[in-house]
Structures are given as C-alpha cells and as structure tokens.
Length: 390
Image (tube, rainbow, N blue to C red; front, side, top):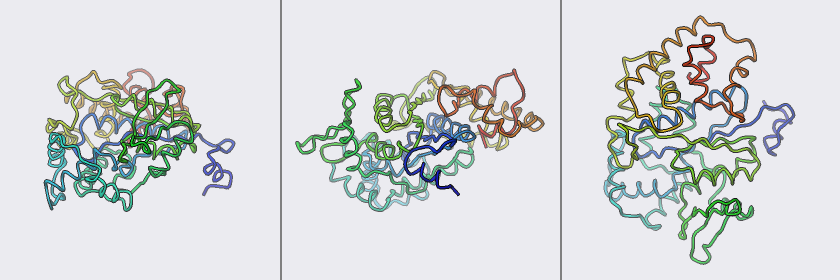
C-alpha cells in the first residue's frame, strides 16, 4: 500500500524524493472494425515490449482505451451503416474477416453520415459505454490473439472512459491558449498551436462531432500532469497530428516522446485495411499457419524478434513468411541457451536495460530486440528475455 508521500505525489503530479519516474505509454488504438494485419501487429508488439522492458526501472501506465475513441465518425458511422443495412444480424458467429468485409462495404458506400445519424450512438457511448455487437465481437476475438501472442491486455473488453468530457477538453485548451472555438459563429473547434509554428487543426465539427485527435486530447490532457514522461506510439502517416499532440501535452509539464512506427508492406505495397485485400495476411491467418512452427514461448519471442528487430521502425521491408520462421527458430535457440545462462544479480536487470535508452526513460524496443540477435557478447539470461516476451 502506498504511503502518504506516494499518495500525495500521485494526487499533485509531484514526485516524492527518490521515487521512480512515472511513464505513460499511450499507443494509438486499432479500430475494432476489421481484422488485425501485420501493420497492426507490429505496433502492438512494439508497445508491448516497451511496456515490459521499461517496468523494471520505472512506474509505467499502459493506456489503451477503445472507449475513448468510439465517438469518432469512423466508428459511429460504421455502426450506423451496420444497423441500417444489416438489421438484426447476430454478430456473435461472425469472424473478423466477415466484419471487415462489412467495413470495406461501408467505406466504399461513400455516404457520409450526418450528425443526426450519429447522435444516438454517441449519446449511448457517453452515457453507458455502449459498444455495437460487431465491435464487441471483434474485441472478443482479439483477446484470443493477445493471449496467444503474450500481449499485455490493457482492457480490450473494459469500459475505460476518458478523464475529460468533450466540453472540459475544449475549455482546458482555451484556458491554455491552445484552442480556437468558433461554434458561436457556426464554425468548428480548432487546436491552435500556431504560436509554435504549427498549423491550425480542426478537432470538432461545427455540429459537435470530434475526430480522433479530439478523443486523444480528452484522454491524455487530464493524465499528463501526473507523469514525468509520456511516450506516444503511432502510425507514421499520423505524424502531423502527433507533433501537435506532443506540443500540447508538453505544455502540461511532462517530457513527451513521439515514437512513429512504419507499416508493413505486403509484396512491396502499403495499403489501408479499409480497402480490404488482407485475407491472406490477417493475424488470425498468420497464427493458424504457425500452429506447428514453434512452442508457445518461442512463438511469442520469435514474433517480437521479427516484427521489431527484423522489420525495424521503418516501412521498407515487405512481410516475409520465411524470415518470420527463421525468427521463430532463433527464438527457440535463445530460449534453450537462456535455460543454462547465469541470471544477473539483484538490481542488475535495470542496469542491463539502460543501454537501450536514448535520452529518455522508456526502453527502445528496437535496440533491445536487435541486441538479442547479436552473435557477440554473453548469452541473454531468461530474465532479460522476459522483458521482451512473457
């Protein structure tokens, strides 16, 4: 149980003398409307390793709330499309691919939903944590993938509302001089960081619909003062918005680090899941193809070696089954050698991990996993491997 000094520090945002640094890890969420793809898996594994490897030396909070992002038009529009076109479909028997095909049809329809179309769904999300049965089914299926891959589950099936209501978030931005609210004139709400040389960014439409950046601000603005460091992980294509987010969160006091992660090309091409074409490369298909490839521990470690160390932070290398299988074999070898390797003494593990930092508290997953592939140096101990994979 925390003593008075620790409790006060958590309440005020100040750190007690000698306390460990507090790190907030906030990856961008994957919308539960389609199958997980190799690009999604890369981001999930990257965040998982950062979380596991940073915990030995810092107090880490992994914030990943689907509840926060349900109010976006991307999600609510899909739910409205499903109810309008599918009626009383029982989604409990559908696969991720089945639901993903419906999502592709929704995006191809090209019929933007109106504010009146979405309002009942938005109100249900805000008032009682409503999740459409299709989204709930996808999240249930994902929990199975998380379990097999050894991913930390940050609450896929939990109701985790953001700390700020939409109006509270807007008021907070305005008070800091970082917002521009034109709704009284029939206009939208903007995030205004122009004094830092960044462009205006609309975050709420004139009729009150938030985009995903507004949702991120609702979640992260009230949390930011309570952490020494925030690491945000996101798709490289979102870099302009995350530069804005970095600036706004830093205004609350913490050091903010952006961690952009490249997508995984398939046969040299990077495409959005909204367009389909992912049937042969979903995480479900991939896992089923590897049922006899490795024991569970080697599968979990090998996945991390491939998607982090081999593919790297960029997006130049296409997905290759043969290299993935080689990573699984390498994982088996590492685990076998680690069984007889000496364990580091008490307190030595954080010191071993420090070399994989780059001027920040969190551990760099690429540096850490790449080090495991080195043929020089001592055999990694089991305790070091478990900071990468359970």
